Image (cartoon, rainbow, N blue to C red):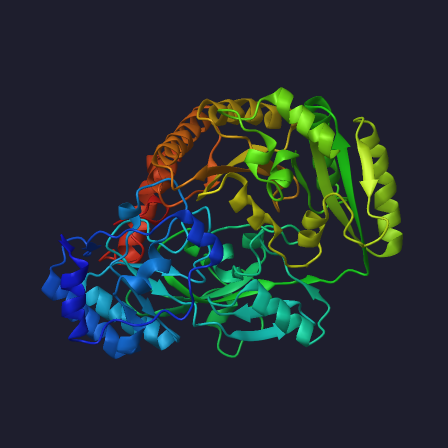
Length: 550
């Protein structure tokens, strides 16, 4: 059932439900085309009368000005960048909470009326779904105003934060208090937040780059309003909540990542101690053969703890952050390999490369650098180092990410093709050169078939070097319906061919959560459903998240 915007606003005005949104849509999001302008979708199975009663009661919990139902102020909650129909992600409204007690009150009302809610922390999950819900008719539970840094312990190198805290906010705190700590953050770090990124199992680039391996202790509001503090947080007066992850009995933290089993309202995280020194370097190869050998070398060095991080890939991704595609190639379809070779030659860009940073004392770095040079030299790769920190290093942006310096250079990718469309395709690959080559042979032809360039790279995960996340960006013009349709078909086929070849995605956008969940088999989906029914029997928390429903 749907309700026209005029009809809804007329009814909502009687209960003072509309409100101004305090933050405008981020500039980059404005390129994604107009938001949906059709009828406001009501939650499935909920009548207009019942919904308006729920809106009225939600207003009593958070203040009527914090229940948003008018079209103009829902724009930031309905903008999407993924290749899907806007109407499939149109929210019924949004609720802005400022405290755990308000979250409990919201869940009480939503349980009473069976109103589904889609929780966001900062809502900057660009390329994976932004702030919009996975299915239409959900109310967005916006936790951006819950943005307190509750504690930073420079001795234990830990922090405790609320959902709305951004990496920029946390970095500013660290700088203001002159703390010897570094953050690990994703590419849109300044505007994203550690809680949301970690709960979606996002990654960063320094020693603590696998974020899900470096959080410690959650506060979660369950669907019935119960507050759960995981691990040591369950012990009154404990001071080890952010220090020891396991507590006693089953470890529960993991079930709240990439799930819809509760609303996370606090998270502890580990911060990297600022090292005494670091050394940034790049290994460049003129051909894929050398790059493939380099993967095996990097894996061995990771397993030996000589390397602690690493990003590998071809040059077009980095070029796309600074150049528009139309200035590189004006022909139809994907850029041909011969044209790419000329582009790389003209720009002096190595076609394939590895970027890493060594951390430690000067003495440790000297020993490790000797090992690194000898190992990569055997692959025929050229080693390039930053002699001074002057920004002239060819991969300076990535080094900034690896050394705790926030920036937004990768937002240049929005301009590469234009039109504000982007979707990340993220399969997991064994850290073997042969597997990386197999993955490239699988993915690149599908992208080319649908007319898209390969923009990707491989990130070492935090498991000691045994796996790589293949991060591929499908950049498209979302204002072009035909191109958006092609991007959707391309993403769909990529999932299919990868699953058939034994590759699974570690993360996906809201349009394909069901399909990706299916690739992991019926047993996992069945278990997730059983947990969902036990913790959220009315199914109000983010239905469809990661393909999980009651």
